[in-house]
Image (cartoon, one colour):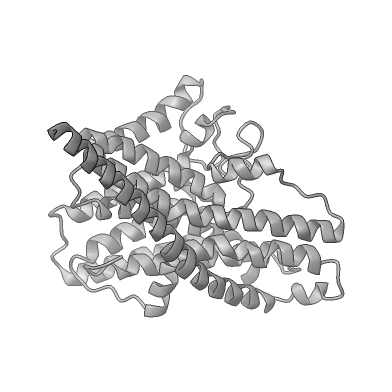
Length: 380
């Protein structure tokens, strides 16, 4: 993400991805540590990385489209860019994970939990348990982190549609989000809630569409619009205070467990507050972001998707060997993190910047050629 003192956004992305990686490895390690211990805290609060991703996504969509003239053509271009950014990498890694886990489970005689059909549903961004599994994961995906991409893709699809309405794009998007998040529960005889586990009795895609987690995308959009407005905090001292204060609130919420869960009424509100303060205050002061964290943010999408390769297959097989206790040692989490970051760098280079960029350029080139031929035919 280029520019105007927004490197902190990528740094926060990197931190969020790292939190999720630690969450998943420590969950499987089943460490025999007291509930108040550091590792148990990490296991619990690691999920806070997800709402951070959602808020950032909403913000970045506003920022990245600030110079775009919303119309049918820009909607198509946006859809192609988003699709090629996410889908190719996700498909390759989902198929690879499906094959590897299937082989790993066969090695130890375990029952493989995912059918070929489940893999197809996953790469189509359809939750595997809409009818029976609890919210917000809704049965998830073959490649587990993919459950959150189901929400991301819904948000991008909705934004693409709203682009057809020109300058009304953002008001319309917020109106639709509000209508679905408030109206759908009421239509099903239930009151709207902020709790992430709210499913409102839906057993179809409406369970995802009405999920309170989507408020976090809306919050990111509102922060983005405020950032692009003329609103600015003129006093540098106040800006510095707000950044430190909002960060302290997040630390307090995570450590004290005064609020819990991925919803707005859980960790979400404090993360929204912090991101709001950082975004607005970055117009007044320079917010430092370590280059290492910015780099981690650049590979965060790949890191989010590749880390399960070093967790489930390794633990499935390793748990049946004499190395079981060694895998439970807290230090093994560092091995998983290091391996995941290395793999993420490769995925970023060859899948995100290689395959994805190639497909995007090809699709857009074909579309431009077709458009030119149509114009030429019309002129003739």
